Amino acid sequence: MEKISKTLMSWASILEPKTREQALTASRLPFIYPHIALMPDAHLGMGATVGSVLPTLNAIIPAAVGVDIGCGMIAVRTQHTAESIAHLDRALLREAIEAAIPLSAGQYNTEETETAKARNDALEESARRADFDPATYAPNWRLQLGSLGSGNHFIEISLDEEDRVWLFLHSGSRGVGNKIAQHHIRVAQELATLWWISLPDPALAYLPQGTTQFTRYIKELHWAQDFALANREEMMDRVVARFAEWTGDGVTEHERINCHHNYTAREKHFGKEVWVSRKGAINAEAGVLGLVPGSMGTRSYVVEGLGNPVALKSSPHGAGREYSRSAARKAFTREQLREAMAGIEYRDTDAFIDEIPAAYKNIDVVMEDSKDLVKILHTLRQIVNVKGD
Image (cartoon, rainbow, N blue to C red; front, side, top):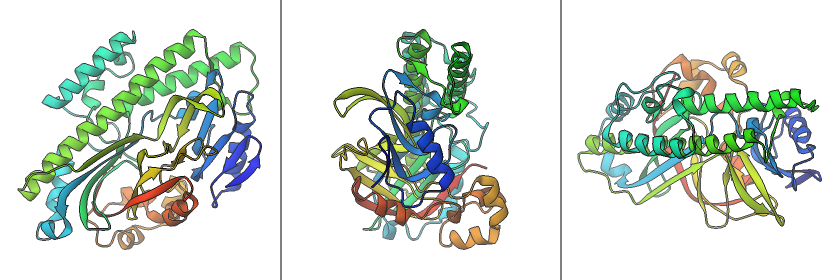
């Protein structure tokens, strides 16, 4: 751990200068308490650094939560092993998953499944209690439940250190969550202009607690977080079903872990109640289970939190980018991606070049930097990868 300033603590041994400066800038805001915790996977974000934990007194920065509200991971450990599925064609499983779950930006379900309808009905009721209509942001929000998206979102079949099969996926609140986030980021910026608040970056605009704008954001933020959680559950249920059909032997779930890494929660740290925004970080309270994915083609981890108080009981959410998407497309080739994905069943396309492992920090370094934040319970290696363009 490095104390960069009294309001910025860092666990990142790989830290690009612009990322360091961005985090320092955010840490100087007067309502940060007691400090920002910079995770080992930190990299540049919009206003606030991705891979940072921002505790705030009586205010929230919507951009510090991010535009994919509630983005996170879910994993299921099955009774299957590498040996029990060795004779099966993994391409057929990948294709079955791709047929069951809409992939890529702007792709949604054409109709609700029975389980999706029940989840959507519950979400609709919670929105009604919060006195807002998600359809004002996305008329087709119900059809978005059970869809993956694009970018670094993925579905994977993995094996752990004992060759046990895990089902693993990464996604968030999709288009409806993005629209909610974008709306409240704009509202915060409009208030800053109206109240003559000078900010080092417009993306650091905040909503003061006690205002109607703050109250509305909290209600809609929590709804979007619930949507993201339900979205992952719906997709995982479909993955479990397709995996069961592929094996012909059903699935027994020995563990199911579902956690956010873009969210805000009310917590107590260093003697005060604060709003903790984890932008690319997971809850790592003592004993809490979490998921830390590596990049496409590398390892992922099931972890247990150690409750480090200086880190605000948090840990990294993944490997963290070293190359922007555009820079990665210029630096790497499809052949290099093929080499990195050797032995993994995936859809071979130019669309994934910007997700090549070399575009990300070394996950081994990230986990070494995290040794006083989490304990590694399981190390997962991928055998099937599903992504959207």
